[in-house]
Length: 157
Image (cartoon, rainbow, N blue to C red):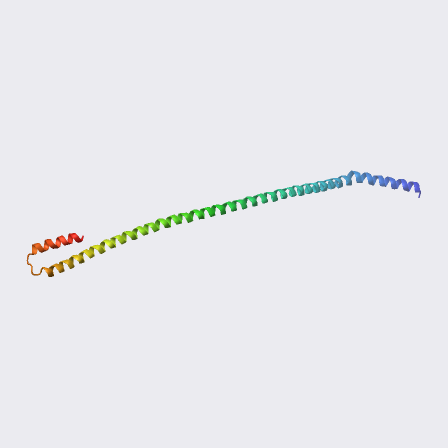
């Protein structure tokens, strides 16, 4: 065998192998590599977008938390104000109720005093009549006796 022929045939076989590889093997490999590069680039871009969205969500959650704390503080302030109003209303209501009860009690006292005076007048009249009848037992004039008792009763009232 001739070394030149071997080298040439090996070079020709290698050239055919390179041509076949470039024509049929290399394009699908390059397409797969490009698709993989595109997938990796899309993944990296999605990661960056996710990172930005995470930062935005974190900022939004901080804002919402601040707003919720402010609302809670406002609600507490309003509740304290309303509690003060309710206490004041209860004080005014209790004062009115106390005044009403006091007025009722005074009316009851006045009524009882009036009733006691009437009963006392009746007792004094009865005592006066009893005393007068003892004094006037001997006197028979009933008309004069009745006039005298009526005038005494009028004076007592």
